[in-house]
Length: 234
Ligand code: HEM
Image 1 (cartoon, protein in one colour):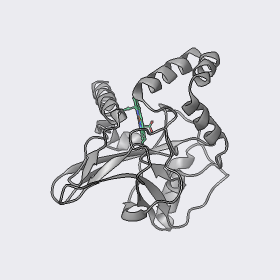
Image 2 (cartoon, helix red, strand yellow):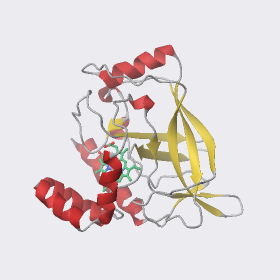
Image 3 (cartoon, protein in one colour):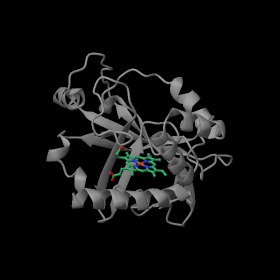
C-alpha cells in the first residue's frame, strides 16, 4: 500500500489517493501482479499525454493550466476529483481500481473485457483523528480487531465501453461479480517488507487473464522495470 504519485513522505493527516499492489502465486505456479489506485479513472488517455502532464507539473501551475486548456480529459478528471468525498480514510477503508482494462479468457479462448475494483470487506472506521504514523497504526489496530480484507469486484464491459482509454469511466448499469477476497494477515513498514524487490509490472498476468490493446499497459510495464532496477541498484 502506498500514497500514489511518488509521495514518499506524504502527510498522514491529509486526504490523498493511495495505491495497492501485490503479487500472487497461483496453485498452477503462475505469477500475477495486480496494481491499482484509488482514482476512479486516469487523468489523461495515453502515456504520452501523461508524460506531458508530468512535465507541465514540474514547470508549475501556469503550465498545468495551459495543458488543461487543451485537454478535456484533464478538465473532466479535475471536476470529478474536486467533487469526491475527501474524508481521510485508512488504507484498508479505501476502494482501489484497475483503471486500465484487461481481458478474461475462457477455455474456448473467448475474451471478455473487464475492469475491477478491490472494495473493503467488512466494517472499517472512517477516522478523523490521526497520529504521525496513522496508516500503519490504524491497519494494525484493525487487524487486531478482526479481518482486514477486500473483495475483488469485476465489472464486465458493455459493448459501448471504451476499453482502450483509461481516462473514460464506464457509466451506467454493468454486470458485476465478486471473484475473490484478498485477506491481509500482517502489516509492516517498507523497510521490513519485500516491496522494494517487486517489479509492479501490470503485464505479468496468470492463465485466464490477458492485457487489452490499451497501449498504456505496455508503457507502464516499461516504466516499472526502470523503477525496480533503480531501486535495486540504490
Ligand atoms: C502512463 C501511465 C503511468 C505511468 C507512466 C506510471 C508511472 C509510475 C512510476 C514511475 C511509478 C514508480 C514505480 C516504482 O517505483 O517502481 C509508479 C507507481 C505506481 N503506479 Fe503508476 N504509472 C502510470 C499509470 C498507473 C495507473 C493507471 C495505475 C493504477 C491502476 C498506477 C498505479 C501505480 C501504483 C499502485 C504504484 C505504486 C506506488 C504508488 O502508489 O505511487 N499507475 N507509476
